[in-house]
Length: 336
Image 1 (cartoon, rainbow, N blue to C red):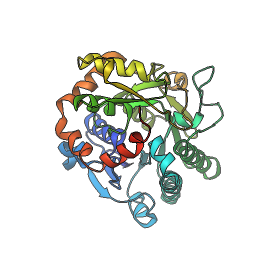
Image 2 (cartoon, rainbow, N blue to C red):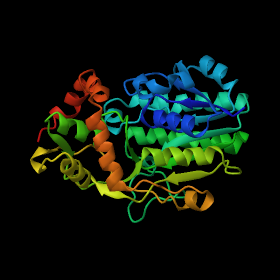
Image 3 (cartoon, rainbow, N blue to C red):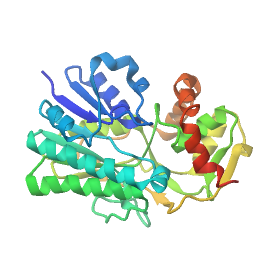
């Protein structure tokens, strides 16, 4: 019998891709998927494999629920979080609650029930600016948004449970993901779906801020590799590709793939505390394990664009629902 793994936030973008990956690669693995089903948690993401996992609708802050689930699993992969910078600027409290207190609830239960491994999914946002080099695991943490700060708090809390109690924690800090099933508040699905709807693509500021981009499948393989690794407890691993692209470069590929021109762009007031550059050096992960990124950026991005083009039944209900109010609140007041 294979391992029984608790995946938190497994109905979200990266979490659902991870669940799908693990079910494909590990036929004997049992997945328990705990998700609160907030706006970004979507059962449609895993509709075709729902019979192959155990889904639990619940909150990671619910100590009684978490304790009961933790008693019956071997390992934990913790994706669940509030994750969007813009939303954290508008409402920081929910980020602190979910990202910090929720992580504490999971760690405490994992310690009580002696799990084999706890992988905490952090983010490169915790580093703040990557000024003169891609961020290293040894660099200081200077988060610039409430989202980034809440993830930094959770990241350090997870490490403290290793340092103080010996809980077998591994922390990953990944760069910007792209791929199928990404909620359209994020850059790539927002731009693609806006373009398909004949709407403008809202570019913050000058559009030259850069991010290191990784296909979600490469991220999932990295986490899978660490889940099965030996002797990495207490370690932090960056996950990235050094494919640094600006917002304008991303937009150019999207417009080219969809046969549109730059008239589709509109420049809006910059985001508060906007980070100019996020990038991570994943050399430690590559040297320590067999993991290497497999997806080439341009073809993988174009494949992602085509996925959204071919699956309007997935994203149109989202954009026609509560997303409308968020979009109006975030962009309408900024203006071109």
